[in-house]
Amino acid sequence: MTSKADPTFIERLRAIQSATRARSEAIAEHTRRTSEKLAERSQQHLQAMRTHIAEADKRRAEYLQQQAQDDAAAKNQWLKRREVSEETYDFGASEGIEEDTAPQRPVPPAPVAPPTPPAMEFPRAQSQPNSVSPRRENRQPNHFDDDDFSNNSWME
Image (cartoon, rainbow, N blue to C red):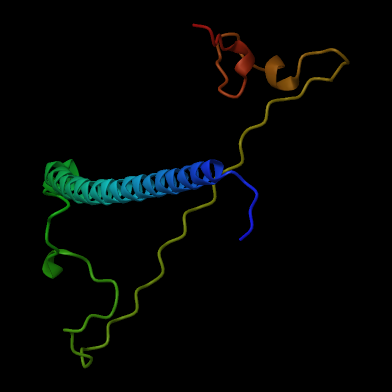
């Protein structure tokens, strides 16, 4: 190696290179340790979160169970009643009745109500333009018509 450089400069260059490598390795080691610490903290936080979620789920289940016990519908005796077949009507074919029962007599049809007589009509007055409708014309002054909303005072 034929170098024309001054040996002191070469020594200084080697010292700078070794110091730079050492500093680089120290930074890499520090970065690795920091990454491991962060990963460990992350795992701890994840475990704590899972524990917290499990505890919250347990509390929610207890709360829902308490709500179900306190529910007014759960305490309603009418909703808890039992069905008794002797006390209810049976409109369909039941399983316990024998098929060989005596035939029943046909039920006569229900009597038909007589038709209602037609409503009595009032005599109609001759219609004039701008005149009052026949319905209002034949109305007594004290008569209140449910269909005529113009007489109602909605503000009272």
